[in-house]
Length: 262
Image (cartoon, rainbow, N blue to C red):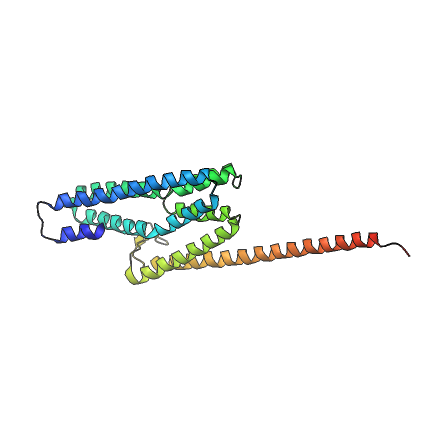
């Protein structure tokens, strides 16, 4: 859609350009609407059929597959916002476009949460998640970025491995932060504002901090997650060994009681 719109703006302006733009935008949003209806029907059928694991897979796959779409939307909206600041004479037009684009993008995000809501419904009926987690996942599914986390964690709950899903989610988040930092070191798209030490005011444009913060933060997330996962796994393994030793001792005691004296 964006490629066609850019091509229209690059071409010589004609009387039919605005019409083509409306047709393209309308067709795209019609496709989204149809896909949403299909997802709703499919979710209801799977809820009735008690296909919880399939719903969880659908929720996670849809959320992960939609990441490029939302990244592109975010980049385009940020570009339009910056252009509206620089090109003051067309600012109001771009602000309208940004408002409409943001609203449609949010509605699209909600459409990708259909399987998430269906999965929450099934897990709640199976008592795999309590009321607190149900409310938490519902809230996460209504927000950008956190909706992806909800999809991954629900997949873990459907497999009865929520801790493992959390570990993979944190590791993926750390990797994503490092990738953002590395890309910013080449393209410089991040712009943080930092307080000035010893002075009143703020300063921006510190390149090494702008890409260094995500890299360091991502590395810390990966390191801490790895340490906690290893420690937790070692504790569980030790607990399992103790339980096995206790069972063996109990079995030996029962066996010795059955042996006749003398």
